Length: 121
Image 1 (cartoon, rainbow, N blue to C red):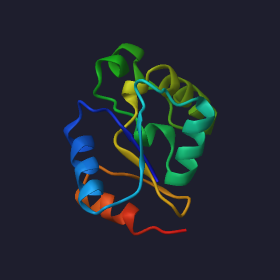
Image 2 (image 1 turned 90 degrees about the vertical axis):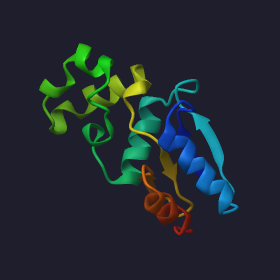
Image 3 (image 1 turned 180 degrees about the horizontal axis):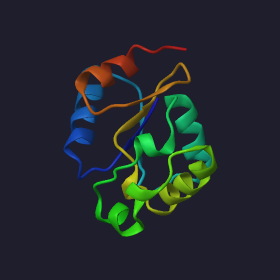
């Protein structure tokens, strides 16, 4: 299990605290320092069952500068979104937990963290 976090994010700190409280075995990825590649983002999207625009923080200043709200949300635009996430990792919704069963969750609530903990391969 791996959790992608921004240590400055309260939801990330809360998720890590809950993982620790549950005695979970996991690795931390500070994704702003260890930026995911486009292929890693594609893999996580596949595990999440989501599209790149579903995990994009569109309220961030960088998103506004890029005009993301105006971008098409369709298959032909998918690579453009993924490239933007790889170049601007701050735009990636957090935290993301990759579960042991090959799935992943955006763990913004305690329920989502517990859901990830319950997913065994």
